[in-house]
Length: 113
Image (cartoon, rainbow, N blue to C red; front, side, top):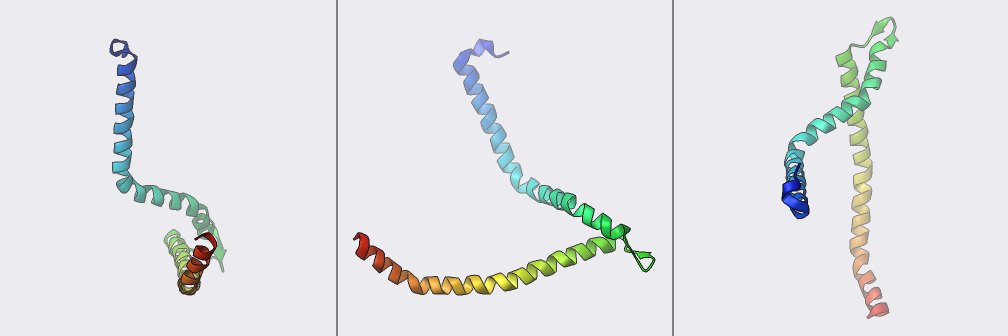
């Protein structure tokens, strides 16, 4: 198809096309990422929501919207609970690291300097 360009010409055209494709992907990345993330979450959470929707509690079933809200609420509680557990620990470790940093620097400089 591109025989008239020669070997170097074909290589150049392929590189230009690959660069253009990479540029388009990088440009659309900011636009497509939320949609890809939402699709992934919907795919992962669909079986849980279906299970809650079909389960009967005292001969009543949870509506699909109620099941979605319940799953989102549980995820929110887990994220907030995990964050409230992790953030203080990370903060304390960062504080101790900042205090120990000058000692470590002097120790390293004595050993290597």
